Image (cartoon, rainbow over all chains, first blue to last red; front, side, top):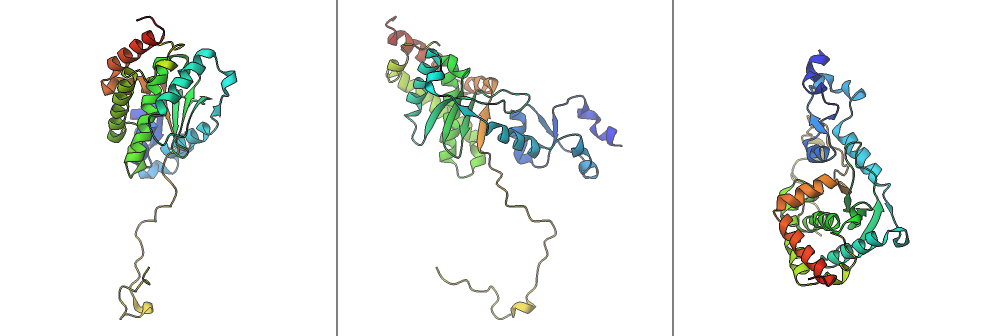
Length: 195
Length: 71
């Protein structure tokens, strides 16, 4: 009976049990898919398969182990790009810090290149992200999108990935960053930059 | 702050109807995410989705050339 129920998605091992549609976007973001299961097997199946909430909680706990890297441990290139990232952030009020970090993978399926800490309003950039100005700017536009959306909307959920408020905020940030780059606001930070 | 008044002051509290919820109350756990992590692939995809990929590349490549005195 149970086999028949789980058969359609048994082929993939990236399924978690949906307990709340609220986690669907985050589950997808972590490289998994949420599936509904009948109530009658809901109490026994979680022994073998974790739920969406457990996946998200585990991810959040793992991300708590993010470690900030001091400047003297960075390569000259990463340090130059970190200064560029901080210069970009200085044009967006409310950001309390931008740090080079070692960020653990958000799940066993996805790596973490950048992270926005909603509580402290800090942006963490992984060391690999800082190796190129292009990935640094991409991460900054995305994470600042979270920050701007977070400031604009009443419901924090609306500032998360794949939400219209985040997409709109990213578009605003991208436009502003291009404008500032064209106005030569970042030139002094780009002398050692590698696109 | 005015003092809270009962909805039905004429009915004694002991005789007011009590409603038993049919479903368990939701816990007050915070369902907000503290950390919003992004993979390299998501960063690339979302930048592409804004439609500003080319403009960002162009603006910064020109700025880098200018900063290095190449242009």
